[in-house]
Image 1 (cartoon, rainbow, N blue to C red):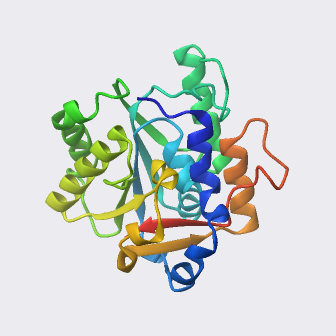
Image 2 (image 1 turned 60 degrees about the vertical axis):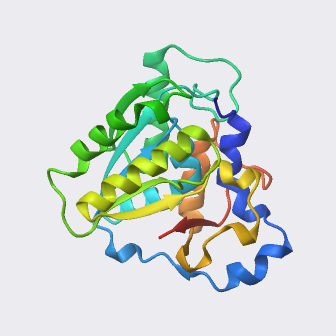
Length: 236
């Protein structure tokens, strides 16, 4: 299964489009304690999902001096050109260049991006490979302040859920802080479905919103309709 460009883009705008049923719960959500994070390992099932769901957090932590590493589990993505919603796939080398350029627009020019190159839809069957790859990234140099950013294990897409389970297992083994983002969950989730005691929010400044908007849209989106939400939600 692949995520469409439109579905991925929804992760960047969803919080701003929530209806009134969410208002009371959201008003009580505590901020994400980003001052506790020194460095960040990002796991993204497909190239743009972490950027859309958590690009503001990634951008802000990088600006604070955090070292950012990204493990891309699969290169398969319907929006593979670097423009969310692009209809045609690009050659692999050009696609990789577009992804790195998107991270540069996000404000993370020195990102180290690792590619596991699994096929989309096969991630659950490759759990041992995924756990080994993530363990290799974090296990040899584990220290307080190293955070792992991964999809929620109940996100609703089989690849996302498999990545979330692997991240949870590795973080438990190495006693790492796991921060989970939502991507496909925005297609189905209701307030009752979230463990609200774990929910934290990160508010995006105007400059961070602009960087995130530029990263997930090419050319950069400028209309109100395209502008990303002013906050991101995480499970912490």
